[in-house]
Figure 1 (spheres, protein in one colour):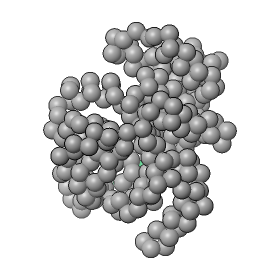
Figure 2: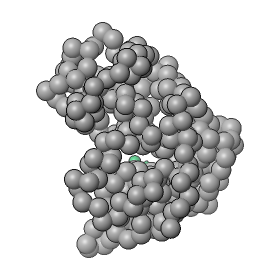
Figure 3: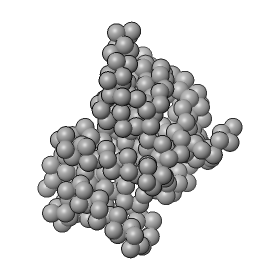
Figure 4: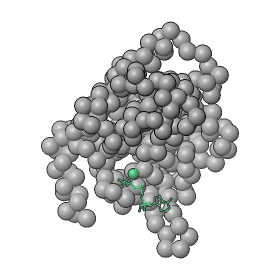
Length: 249
Ligand SMILES: Nc1ncnc2c1ncn2[C@@H]1O[C@H](COP(=O)(O)OP(=O)(O)OP(=O)(O)O)[C@@H](O)[C@H]1O
Ligand SMILES: [Mg+2]
């Protein structure tokens, strides 16, 4: 199974059931592969299972049933220690909880993935990190701790940290959610560049049809199921699809 090496992450018939009494099927038989080098947008109504899918695909949360792969490696049933190393090397996260380390300043937080891996920073990586810091407007904030930053600034630090090591795969859950429109556009353009120029694969949850129109592919979830899967399409077409799904529900 999963011999298609062009998939950087995939789930096969995954179910995620929450709760012991009155259980909720957050994912109800989802099969989806994130293709190498592609920018994939994940859309769908609130509660449709988007965040759950990101967490399960990234191995941050286990599935109730079904199989989960990162690259060719099946992570279903892998132990935490193995999973942590695999994730740190290959996967970047931009999630709704930014998980910044409160005792580290902005620079320390951005460099954390290198430090955790005991890895030194090449000149090329240093230039990329400087570019990220400037593009994300963090140059004047490098010595600040997370509690001294606004929500949007914290989000931008989390984005810089996720992109710093140029991971093969990036999961982003509403990465432009707290940002003003100019910064939101900068973040989208950083993500597009990451996939088009550096061949990184991106799975991004968004409610914004304009953000999704930057993606190579748009996947729609409803009630824990994939209900549509389209190649790159216009913001207008995406809005129409969203509307038709809401009225169908
Ligand atoms: N820890 C949990 N315990 C119980 N139910 C949960 C838990 N996390 C999520 N759910 C339920 O699973 C379903 C899917 O939630 P999920 O967070 O994946 O939705 P979403 O598509 O990301 O929504 P949103 O757009 O609002 O972020 C919802 O019905 C939610 O209430
Ligand atoms: Mg969510």
